[in-house]
Image (cartoon, rainbow, N blue to C red; front, side, top):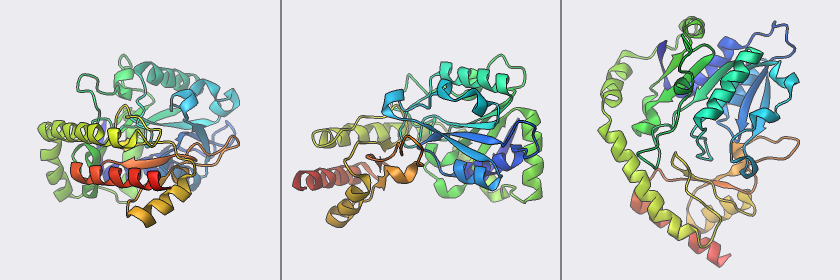
Length: 305
């Protein structure tokens, strides 16, 4: 039920190639995904010959895709539902009842739920860790229709190591292992050996969370007087509202040498608009002092506009 992978990026892409069946008698295959999103979901769908279906995650629905707003005709074509909790870039955590609702729909319409949980160990309240899909699936004999994706990159701050794992339904995992074996994605032995101490130690993860809490406490009082911004449920991003995200990003870099990401670049256009427009993603990965300096420069830029 567990398979090591070369980071979640490779695994999230490969699972779509494993699952999508272009010959299914259910119409053109659809892959449902949150929007904004980790763009690997979209690219994987295109390259598998499936239709990416974007579920906008906006302030009006609590930054969680509204599962009940998806038409039945789309669910009937769905072969895979991507979830990301805590969300990138929103930081919103899906409650366990939300995850159970996703599994109910998977049972009804015969699709797989792929839960991207690589931010799940970076959260602000030590007493309230985010719920995961496997927790929501308790009672299922073999975690049918469930796959979860985890990585060392966020919890241990080692994105370059490219080390993660997938866990879940052994029937799906068997097909996934066969696919990965054919295209040569086995994790190198030295990466496995380097990963063992990181997975076995929780103290450094607790310290990581403490540092992120310190950064949020330091940065938010600087930014709140000049922009609409709140602490996330989890993760290490801020997702503030801005009048023009692309212009703001370009001018901030030129004026203050601070780099952020325009929200529209992290989301896809839909008939109801791009849910990333008018927002930017601020990452609090640098040191506390560097985050404070950057926040002060952002504030200074806004005050002088």
